[in-house]
Image (cartoon, rainbow, N blue to C red; front, side, top):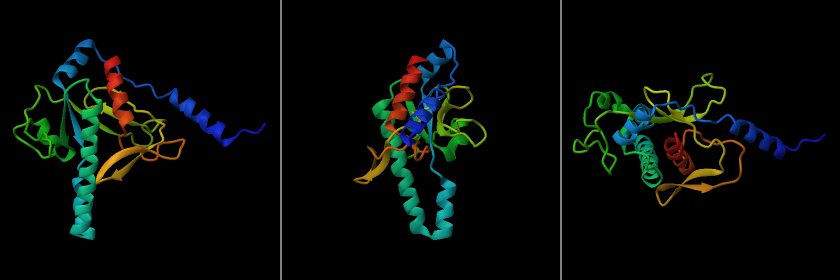
Length: 202
């Protein structure tokens, strides 16, 4: 019996989709605490990569890398402003994680700059987005996770949205269908929508 590639892809989507449940377990008290306190979402400034680009390829390459990172981080912040209302969200750079844990004023203002006038929440609850290391999961999936807890949310695994630069900003646009995400390191609008929905239903 012939089995078309399209049917095979559909079967893979269905089978993997069944395994994408978010492994969250939390008490009502923990949920309410996060909802009232808010989270500090970690933006990746890739400071070491920028330094490497500058050292290896020169200042122009470092500036371009820095500009691309800033464009992407602004895009992520905008996604949370548009699609996330479960709790307050503050932003900080990964290179300043230790400072934030020490309750230093490194949260970002609307210009994505560390600003001492941005008040710290009562408790520092940090959230990040990344992929598991190979071998850590059979899915190898992308995830939002809250540091120091077992709370994580996997976004939609399959989508035909891709990030494209338009008018010097990033926008998600539909592209030709692929059975798998092309770049799981990039957050899409549907991911933040799912995160908000899953936390609200928790």
